Image (tube, rainbow, N blue to C red; front, side, top):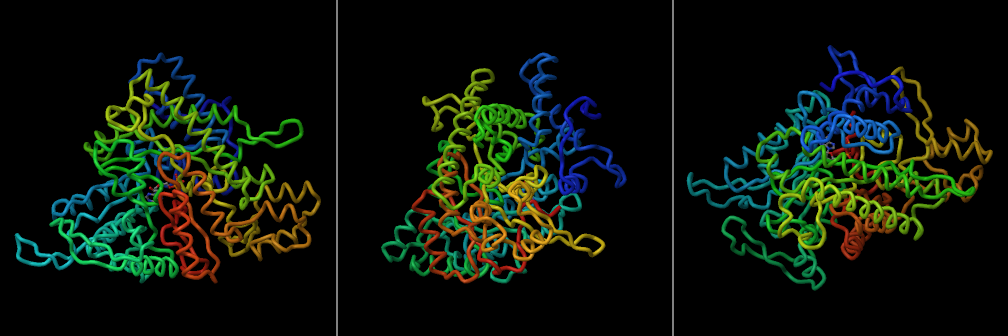
Length: 583
Ligand code: ADP
């Protein structure tokens, strides 16, 4: 029984009013609309359920398990680590579904298509997001032998998936999220690229074109490339690679969709190629998975991994190591504590035991280190931090492998004979849409969104919300005034404000002021040491041209990114799929 209140003498969580609201709306247990759990009770529940696995499954004693629960509790109460939302919401409760990411297969038959729709609905109900490859579906207007009719093609089926998602609002509040991927050599690729042209269509999907090496080569060489009918395996015409590339760019320029995902690169780092190819990712793109695979994520708050040493702010490597080790153990336990929505998912997940440990608060960390986001120095910090986390995570996963065994599909995996690991993947950079709000940290590896902004509250009055680090700096360096804060909220930026010292202007640059090139270079720096992928938005000014977007794609390819999502300011009235921010 994991119900109950956190012991009174355990650490209290220092939450911002915003964080408290987020938790009360969706995460804390309620009976008849009444919240009956404190935030401390919530993490106590989570820590206990996840630690208890060691007693139930790995034969640890009660005392040791209890001590571990307290360690898990502490890193969450400190806001140093947070698992993905489903773990916070569902651990120790009836649903018991703890993963944010799923990929479901869609084979080219009616049964399979509608099975996938049903399974997606079950997953959405539990707070998970689903990704699909539509690449195996025969193109529209192909023959259907059993009926003598013609097939309606991937895009028309995506609309059915979309409607089903629309109907299943998660837990009454959170709408499901999907990723739809179509390979660039599918005959319906042109329809796919424009399927979200009208912003009101297919709103519960992010879409990405699955780019191949062959295609990129054809773009460079200005050649045509072959389309292939997945049903017959035969060539089904040719398209100019340049023209298709230009069309992707044009639509991304218009409203941010489709994104692109480099499929061959995903497969180069597929840890278990013996099990087949990776064809899809979760909704925000950071987690490539095999069909029927799921993954649970967690993120370390880098804002809290900075400390003062001899009067200087430096990275607290010791603490980062401690939190990384505990987080890996926590996430490995989540795999066993999880109640999967389908038996097949349970089997596939437990074969690879993938986990996705990432970070949030990277921009905050840079500010504390007084480093601007758009600099070599920041790229350097990104690489150093992620390399350290990956190394420490592997050390812990190796330790767990010794104690509990390697992941069952270890043999023939890319790690076979290299290092014994408990988990086929360890690191993923998630958007941290909600958990970064809970931790009052900047999201994922993104720059600050704004230094200050105006928020309208229920009674219609407007409040100025100032980035807490900026407020601290302003007070410490004597340029704080409520008028200035209001002025910044109106402008959204501190650039060019004479009241703000130049060096402060430089470290508080926002996403909009960061050039696409630096956005991509930071993404690539994190990707270098991330087993899975990096969720990141590349911001462009409204005046950016199509060629600017094309250039970004080429740079992302050159720097070994696994995919790219672009957004040109003002090109969409509403963000189509906010990443977990729909509280
Ligand atoms: P959180 O901060 O809530 O833990 P993230 O913003 O980091 O979540 O998103 C991580 C993943 O969780 C996404 O890539 C997606 O797979 C899933 N996810 C996010 N928002 C939703 C949603 N509204 N519905 C379903 N899944 C979601």
